[in-house]
Structures are given as structure tokens and as C-alpha cells.
Figure: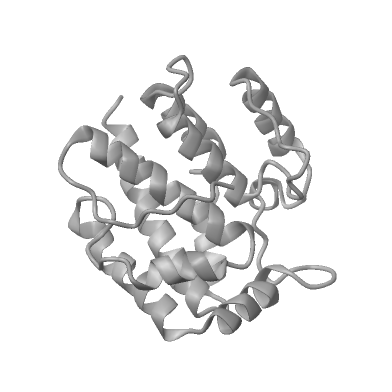
Length: 209
């Protein structure tokens, strides 16, 4: 996962907007992949409460996410992560696309994803413990497709196609699952922000048609 985190509000230029999109995907990758580090939570708590991308639709869910980070301690958020996503056996909430698309882990959606990643010249790092259909991994791919230097794959058309194939079909089910968990506090706020951000992304990609 990316270890950089900048949470300043974006300006009005197209370049700033693309930078903000990449940073949001990077933040989502960090928060869904593992217990948030103290550094990540500290940055989130002092973030400006204007949305990190332009548009009033993201304003309230962003404020709620920042507020949830401020309202809960590092230890409480770590314990919530473990309760929701960790532990022995079946987690309370699955973070893998295959689960939502097929009902099982490591199924055909993961095979298709690996094929599409290979076509983009991407592969899972050996040090990464999660499969490629983990939501954090997919967000990191989107961050790369926005911020990377290889214009053959780092462009809006590829972003749209990857998003439509591997995130859009199931990401709202994940948000529903998280928001339906009584134990979710910080991660319920994260789910609401994720929902709003993905809706903005989907709308933006629809405009490319």
C-alpha cells in the first residue's frame, strides 16, 4: 500500500482533481488493508473538513469520517478493525470482491481480475498477504491507474473499464455490510464516505460514454 498521505482539499484544476482522486483511493487502500497506523489517523484527525475533492456530495461523508477519527482512539479503531475483518474463521465483514460476486472466495471473479491485471502489466507483490480482489488492493490499482506514468494504461478509459469490471459491481454491497454492523463506528463512517466517493466516480465515468 502507498505510505503517502495528503489530505488537503483539492483546488480547481484538472491536475489537482486527479491528484485528489488518487489520494482518496490511496487513503481507502490504507484504511481497508490493515489497522490504521497512528500516523494515518493523526493526519486524518487534523485534515481540513472540506471534502478532499470538489463537490458538495462528498462534503458531509468526509466530515463524518474525519469526525469519527477524532471521536475514537487509535486502540478503539484497531480493535474495531480486528472485530470486523480479523479473527479466526469467518470475519464479520468480507473485504473480497469474489465473496460478493460469487458467494465464495478465490472463484472466477478473481481469475478474471488476475487476467486483467496481467494485461495491465501488474501483479500482486510477494509481500502482500491478501488476494488481488481485496478492496484495498483494488483501490491501490485505481490509484496507480490515475497517478502512474505509463500513459498506455494510466488513462481514463482504462480506469473506467477496470472500475466497471472489478469495483462497481460489488463495492456498495460491502458498504451495506459495514453499515449494517452494530459494532462498526469508524468503519461505518468509512463505508459512507466510500459509498459517496464511488458514486462520484461512477458518475464521472458515465460522462465518458
